[in-house]
Amino acid sequence: MATNKVVDLRSDTVTKPSEAMRATMARRPWLRGRDGVDDDVQRPGRYAYLQYELSMHGIKNNMGNLVSVLAHCDVRGSEVILVDDSHIHLYENGGVSTIGGVHPETVRNNADGTMDIDRIVSTIRPPGGGLYYPTTRLICLENTHGNSGGKCLSVEYTDKVGEIAKSHGLKLHIDGARIFNASVALGVPVDRLVKAADSVLVCMSKGLGAPVGSVIVGSKAFIDKAKILRKTGMRKVGVLCAAAHVAVRDTLGKLADDHRKAPVRLFLSQGLNKIEQFTVDSASVESNMVFLDIVDSRISCDKLCQVLGTHNVLSNPRSPKSVRLGLHYQISDTDVQYALTCFNKAVEELLKGSTEFEHLADTTTKNSYGH
Ligand SMILES: *Cc1c(COP(=O)(O)O)cnc(C)c1O
Image 1: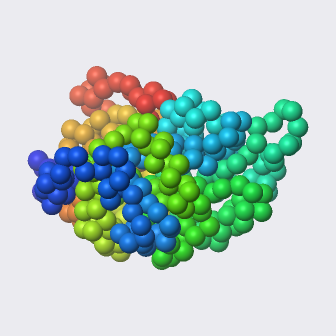
Image 2: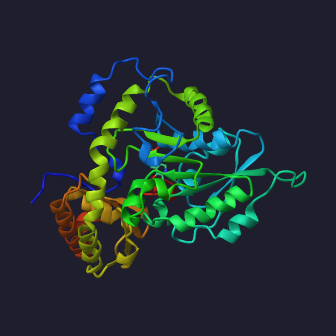
């Protein structure tokens, strides 16, 4: 059994760069990508599968969203409509408002990452709406939606939001940190899935295995603005671009394989569901995340995660009673089996009422729950 191996199920963000990626990064000439004149800005080609005019990489994901929102909302007094538990709204330091001066207007999540179309429409505040209001200029979607357990937004829904945006003179940005996961899970080519969007952010550092970095795509006019914004915070990004190229070349295919391993996710979610103290809605597992709810008052999420940790299985508390597990290509089938055994063991150990764990405190506060 893989006892001295750590099975890290906290998130797909824990993927480590491969040897090939490290070597390519190390070989990267030092000053390449210095002033945005290098291949950090691509013509269609390398990222042609997204079918946008230009792409730009060498930024971190948070920053990619921020740069995108600011590029679309470059008039002061702009407003962005987004889902209330989106990554941009919850986990990005409120950057769109604190740095960008863009007003966020949230619409409730329907538990699957979607906002009601009617609500989006009634939330839009057109220019010239009076002395009181900011002007809506942008709608953001997140696909897959992390806080809904990796749910995929369908192409029909995305197109519908795109139509609404267009008919109101707004732009649509997709936080597609995991857009390839959505594309593979839905069986829809990625360029079709994001067709309605004016810009898309794609994360290189989650399932694709780069240490840091993302790519944003859009029109030439959009990328021209984005390049200037990026320069405010980053330069000499060539080494990140090198990692991104290897991520796309080597890992993208593995991501698809990962999804073909649906039986493994099912094995995990059904296996966890068999443990009386847990429930997992297997039907809701659409991409690479599994949310586990604890239904036994004697077991807290923090203690469960800590005891799992003593067995070298790392997991992420989501709330006092729920754990998030993220699968990725560096987790093998054997790892999943091992993890499941450890979940069973951990429950047993915790229920023994063993004094051994009494010193483990519930230290996780609301604000420290991972994403
Ligand atoms: C992780 C993530 C980001 C930001 O990633 P960082 O690497 O922390 O910058 C943005 N959006 C979504 C949906 C994410 O999951």
